[in-house]
Figure 1 (cartoon, rainbow, N blue to C red):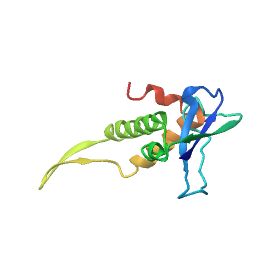
Figure 2: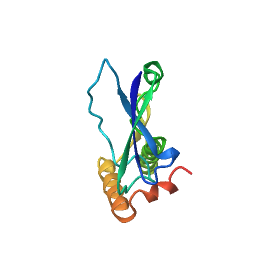
Figure 3: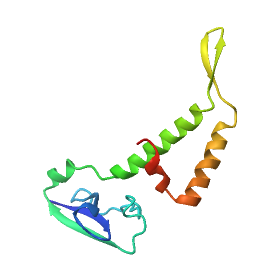
Figure 4: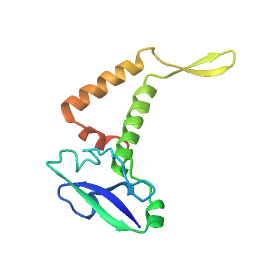
Length: 133
């Protein structure tokens, strides 16, 4: 048997629990790096709960610790898509000896990063909901 360790922020419903890892006889001491932000809903937790569940070690071995929630992965995808769309808007096709190539201004990434920081300062990450829909 092993102890499965979970963390959650309010409202502590079924979907707010995130698996951190296991404590086993083979590894009786461990440190879990918890994040306060697991999803948009968990963005401002006022408190967290830590849960321990006794489960068969073989069952826990099949369950990898959650490194990023589906919402965090989706936010990353939308940020990448925003970058792609921004950079693509500056792309021009040029003909070279080896074939057609795409030319970009040398400061396009600095421009995008400044725009990204401004959007985050003004709207947090709420603006991501309009990207990639």
